[in-house]
Image 1 (cartoon, rainbow, N blue to C red):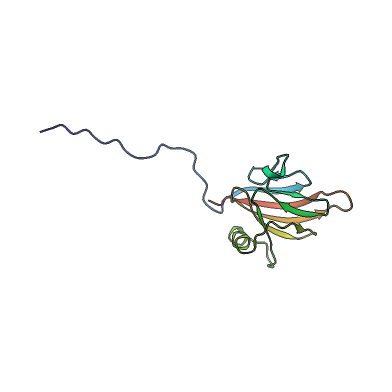
Image 2 (image 1 turned 90 degrees about the vertical axis):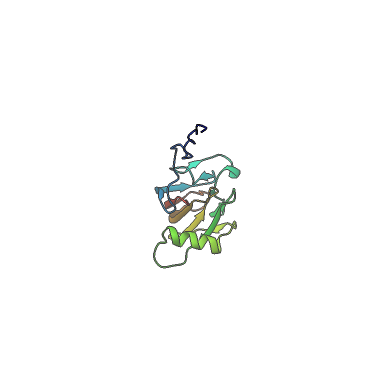
Length: 141
């Protein structure tokens, strides 16, 4: 009778796991200006060029997306959570610039498909193009 050789286990080695969809990656105050920021970094960081970033502010006080990022204006009453923002940006997401005013709420799908909620807390006037948001960024899974 021939000897049998055991077959090695096919279990993948342990490694970094992706958090489940809807897991909060970062929350805090976010200042945007004309320098593009990567919303997939925690905390979001400047990247220097629009083709590397997700969002930035143009001189006319509009939020502009780049790198495949989509933006949708939230019109519901309460602040949206992960599922609400994901649905909104899936249905209404655009690459068109969004005019901003205080209390505007936007849902964003980043270049890495994560979901963010951006609530405007202040918009600079004149030539100052800085806008402050309260931001929450969730993992898309």
